[in-house]
Image (cartoon, rainbow, N blue to C red; front, side, top):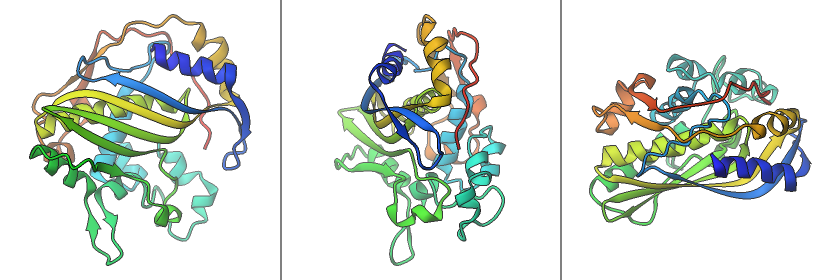
Length: 283
């Protein structure tokens, strides 16, 4: 919580106003932020200065790991974050690659599970990394990336948290995640949760101990219509201690994540929080 609040305060104190051409809304912006999450000690980075709904973030991660490309698939597992980008984004609605209602195109998990080679075949990046790590292999390129510039026009949104690098030191697995752009009041807690849970799950299914998750953000911003709530409400609140994440011990392999796992297989212990804050979402 301290590093999250410090970043929010830094944006307010040092940020510069930048007009976002895609949304038409100004952002108070800083460049470069580094956050760390101790997965080994199960210090779950769930925001406590407002109520945070962690299961939607985990549902979204599950959708990515399964390669979902449709907002209806995400809704079915408890995540509504793709409804607007799939159906209310005018540029995507006018895009000839859009297949119809709820279609997201070739974004995020599609790239992670089905990267298209020039010859038309597909690469499953996630399976490659899982297989290597299960065999104790770290070739210093255990990387899953959703960032495919050649197919940006084929999806409703360029990936924000776009690349995950796994590093094996002895029997401990670490993660470094890279994010090009971050809506700090709304999006960051989703992203924090996903970094943490991704490392916890990957360590579990590859037979290793989880270590540290390192989260690197390039452009961290607060939208103009969020600033007052952040400055005058959330930053005035005292944080509570971090809760702990509980994952169903029956989850042991990639096939589990692809088939039967739901958000009911995740819970938190010791979560204290202040009341929710309804930050506006900018499409």
